[in-house]
Image (cartoon, rainbow, N blue to C red; front, side, top):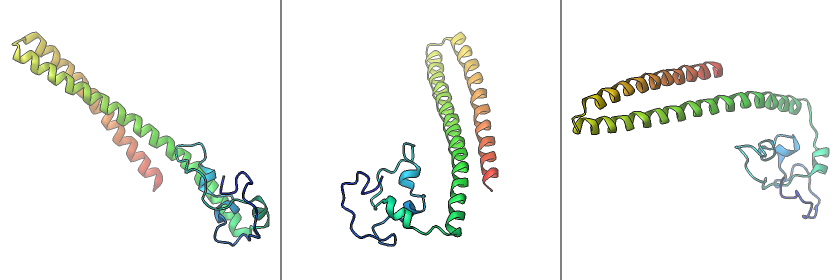
Length: 153
């Protein structure tokens, strides 16, 4: 990735400290490359990515520590992303359940207007079942959210 990804831009005498050189790329941390082909893909980097400059870049001990820290964070990021996806799935289940309850309420109203006592009772029983399921899913979501927050702190 980067402005010179295809080698079509002629290399001028650049140094790794030039403004148009991606410093994050030099240390192996450019987010445009780290999150390639993921949901967080940022597209090509507007700055220059040069392997030659990367070889010349002096990676001292502090940079090595920073790289290992970011790589360790990457593991946490994957776990965070998994938890976020699980939370989204729970929310989707809640939305589906809420739509069912809403539909049952509309049906209940129709049965009431038609003076259909048996239909009303069946609808109320179904609403009770859906409500309890929805309440359980909502409680699960809050417990899961609490776990996530505690794991971050």
